[in-house]
Length: 173
Image (cartoon, rainbow, N blue to C red; front, side, top):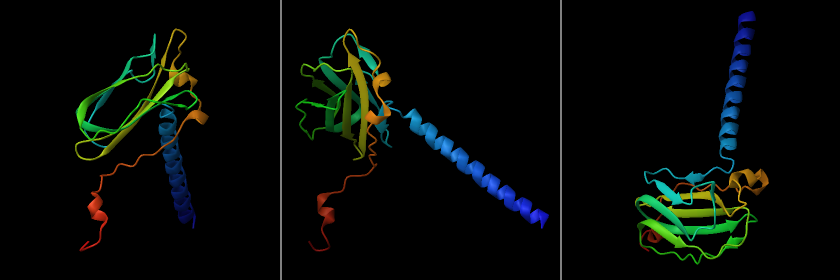
């Protein structure tokens, strides 16, 4: 009986330790993502952008620049101020793939920081999306230091392949 009790105790302890470790790993990764440069993608294309994430600029930039290691199609480009108000960039979808996108900015309204959300479709038809912050002006401070957890948006973007519209039709249609 004592051996069976010890085995049950060890199994329960091992389960508790495992669950505790998984909880720490999950919470650690969640806190590490606290408004860090987010980027969701499982493919091989790399990105570089100007301004850089969490960059403090002396003045508002004239352009946003997104550079990719392969030709991609830009499907989303949204910029918001610190209050979440969308800044009109006059973005219009263009199906032509490119490696570099230079987007002229309008005169930016005063804000503690700016958030840029972007999305592209890679050459293998995978969705790649991300977000970065920057601030500008003589009194600008590190953008990520101003963002509270309540301000964060947790949007999960699944990795999927685009499906041809005709594939939804049944046989013989």
